[in-house]
Image 1: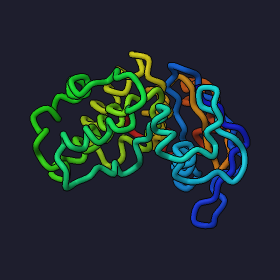
Image 2: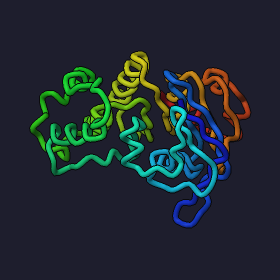
Image 3: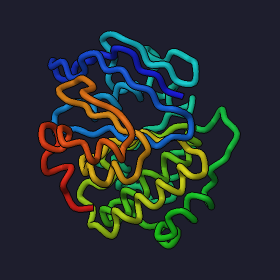
Amino acid sequence: MLAIRDLRAAYDGIEALRGVSLEVQAGAMVALVGANGAGKSTLLNCLSGIVPAAAGSVVFEGEDITRVSAHKIARRGLLHVPEGRQILVDLSVEENLRLGALAARQRARRETMDTVLALFPILKDKLRQQAGALSGGQQQMLAIGRALMGEPRMLLLDEPSLGLAPLVTDQVFAALRTLNAGGLTILLVEQNARRAFLSTSWAYLLDQGTIAKDGPSAALAQDAEVIARYLGHLAAGEG
């Protein structure tokens, strides 16, 4: 579904991606892990058209989207849930969700409002509440729900567990597994490597802007070099 070849990109004048190549198969849930500053968020921002690629290519469902604008990428079904959620805090929960549906304008509706609220039932009771009044976990659910309203064919998630309590993190990842089991392809950036390895079938390790290693998630979770040299406490962390 997604093929990245020799992708290079700079962020604030610093080369953050130095020839990244990876693939995501349709229906898979794939992890991208690595230390802070490795280039994980830059990669997702490049895929979604927020950060321009300096070189290389991004092919999504057979079409080159390397130079396509962000709103057109979203309408093709590649939706991004950014780090920090970036919901519109002054709008209601329902308004945030309905804005997410704008990306689905040219595609048949699959995920409806009812489906999103069934996945995150806590939002159903808060539809008219200002989004800024939600807890951190509820805001993360809203951010994912807003992306789902855009009818994604593939979902890019950046640090969905950041700042969340373990119980809420469990709920978010349970929802992601449900979505993936229903056929949604997911590329997940997650600093909690243990959580990422447990939740995915394949993983890539990004180190200083390049792919250092990849393989089945279960195998990387037991790889002594990955644990000792690259991930350290991240791989041994709770969750």
